[in-house]
Length: 69
Image 1 (cartoon, one colour):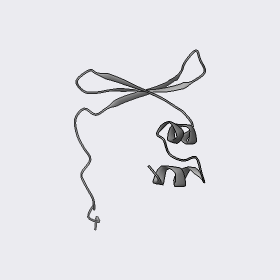
Image 2: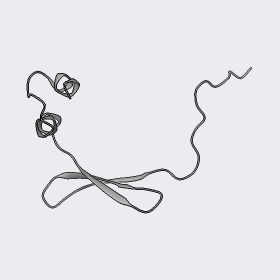
Image 3: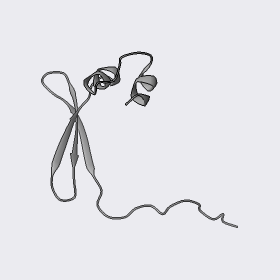
């Protein structure tokens, strides 16, 4: 007997398309393309560096820093 599947059904249709690449500056980039054709680019940075840019005190480990935001 087949067991019942629990949880949500898989989404159907168009989702976000993603691509990663390394730039000439040796930085990693993540590009999202929305179903409407818009592009959004994210730059990979160290989590502690990002927290510092968000004005979090740079104390403790990464999880503690992000919990302060």
